[in-house]
Image (tube, rainbow, N blue to C red; front, side, top):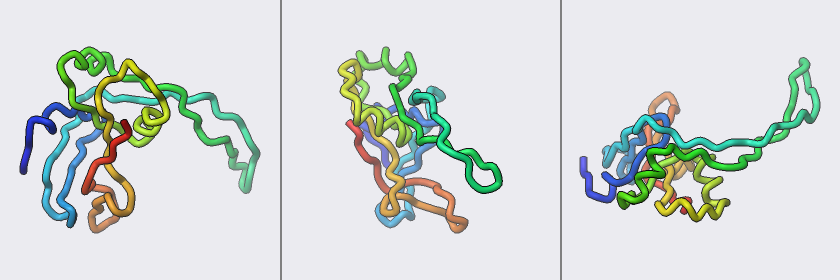
Length: 134
């Protein structure tokens, strides 16, 4: 399993390890271990829309408002942090937000049909590539 200095300076801010496979989805290239700190997005309150069959309530989709970066990561910016790995909601909010206080690159696992690696049961076990949000 190959590693390099750039990969070692990327901190995984998801709650789980991110496993990156080769382009065929067969060989593990790198495992980004979860660091224990998780970046999260805050969302606006959701409003009731209607009730459908069997009294199931329907609410409007979540609207994300801002990102909660772990304090440890923000302090690491001075240490030449290459980037962070985040979940898709965090990455998308980051892409839509021009937060100048964040100087590092933001990546996420590609869970598109072309990028995702699944096991025999259809569960996601990794990705073939990362996407860059900023």
